[in-house]
Length: 227
Length: 227
Image (tube, rainbow over all chains, first blue to last red; front, side, top):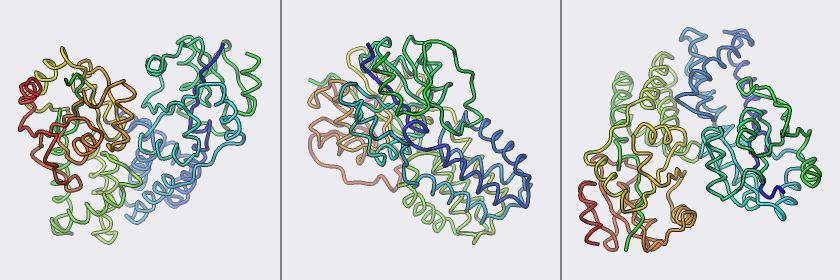
């Protein structure tokens, strides 16, 4: 009997990757005179991967990686005003309204009356807290856990802290790598709700048992009722 | 009877502000051709304050504010390679070894045997976790709480989460604004250990009761024994 539901935030409850994609589109346009779009994407992804160890996940690190890439692909000839534009792109992302995915508000409200809900989200603490506050969902959740990495140890620690038996826990999220595999590895349940766009870094093969995949969070209540 | 001790991290357990000061010195040198040091400091502080609402606290936001300030004070004429230097300064800060303040390792070890210790630190989640891991102190603490703001609500939430009565809690930290005033306001104890350098934004008047000020964390065990 599952009594506690963990929800991922970015791209599960609200749009996030679309904001990065939109910004990356603006980044390509800004540097169109200097770099081929595919090459620019590749260079940016390389910078993001190399910087993950020092910056972690989040918009500020993304902006710093864009600046570094812009300087590198232009051999240092990018005008400072274009780099200022990249900073403004980042601020626009940080200030962007939080847009819930279809059905999220209703499903979270419905499930909150009969389950304990925990938001388990990865990334920049300040930005995530701001998004949770702006999402309007904060009071539906019994707990919020903002973590820097979603690995088995993190999930074990979160469940222990809230006294949740893994056998009675299901994690719902869009990332196989972050929301599904580590959760299954500790003996809990996982429901994958793919998001339309997936960041290249997040690619991973889904396993074939102990989990379900649904097309929309709207399919979650009937799935839980039947499980 | 105090049984739980909260410790601030930055500038209480380990050096932090000195790293910002050192970087700001390099920033002044880099832009010496374009701006008077005092004017540059003022412009940077203005940028940091204006950006706090979107970036929160931490090194990545500091670097973005330095870049923005460098572009502004040079009217966009700063060469991209200098902005790349600012990015490198930031990476050096994020990678810098964690240097404990004098006496910290011994005092934390001694207190951990008879008190519950909670690290309550503010800032960037990823950077703070990395510093805690590198500090070698992680296993001395019963809990670690990384928060985006240190206000009364935050302390109330942290103490409630760990079942700690405020009357039995003392917070030890270098910032009157973050570690002392909000803690006293919820009826707990606070010990101020000033750090040599104080960031202008952190200035606040100390209260005159229900708290103690000590010169070094080495004075903490006798103070607690006598309190």
